Length: 273
Ligand SMILES: *[C@@H]1O[C@H](CO)[C@@H](O)[C@H](O)[C@H]1NC(C)=O
Image 1: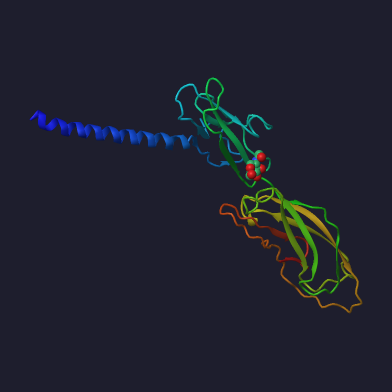
Image 2 (image 1 turned 90 degrees about the vertical axis):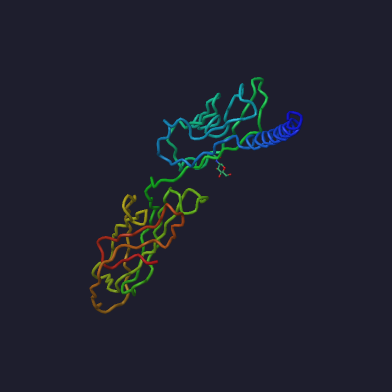
C-alpha cells in the first residue's frame, strides 16, 4: 500500500510547491507597483485636518526600517507643511483648509528610504486636486459712462459690462479669473433726452445662475442720452424685465455658472445676449 501511494503523494507535493512559488512571485511584483493609496480630491474650505490620513504611501519592499517623506510645493516648499507624512506609517495628513484660488493642484513626491538613506523605491507622484467651492463674488471692472441716442430702437446696444469671478469656470483646467460680459441694450424706444438726459443704473451680477446660495455684486453705470432732432416721441409702456442668464454654458457637472443682470430704476434698459 505505502509503496504504491507514496510516489503519487510526492508528486502532488512537488506540484503544490511550484504553484506556491509562482503565486508569491506574482504577488510581490504586483504589490510593489502599488505603493500608494491614491488621494481623493479635497474640497476647498473643508476641514480634513482631523482625518487620520487623506492618502497613504507604503513600500512593500521591506516591512521594517523604511522611512517615508514627502517633497513639493505645500511640503518643503512654500506654503510649508500643508501636507505632512508620518515617517513610519506613510500616512499623509493635511494640516490646513485649502484654498483653490491659491493652489488648485498639489504635486507631491512620495519617498521611501532605508535606514542608511538609500531610496527603497522609485519616487511616487501624488497629485492632490482641490475642488472648487463658490466662495467668490463677481467683481465688476471699471466702467466708463455709456452713450445712446434718444429714440434708439429696442435692441440697440449701448455698452458692454464686464465682471470677473475668481471661482473655477466649467473647464477644470481653465485659468483662475473668470470673465462675465453683458450687453446693455435699449428696451424701449421711448428714450427722450428732453425728459431724461442721463440714467444711472444699478447693475447686479450674480453667480450660480442667479440661484440660491450665489454671490452677487452691484455696480452703477451712467448712460447719457444724446440728442437727435426729434418730434414728440410716443410713449410706450413696457414691462420691466431685469434678469437674464448669461450665455455661458456651465459645463462641469457640479457647477453651473451663469449670471443675471438686474437693471434697476428704469424701464428703458435691458440686458441682451
Ligand atoms: C501641478 O501640476 C499641474 C499640471 O502640471 C499644474 O497645473 C499645477 O500648477 C501644479 N501645481 C503646483 C502647485 O505647482
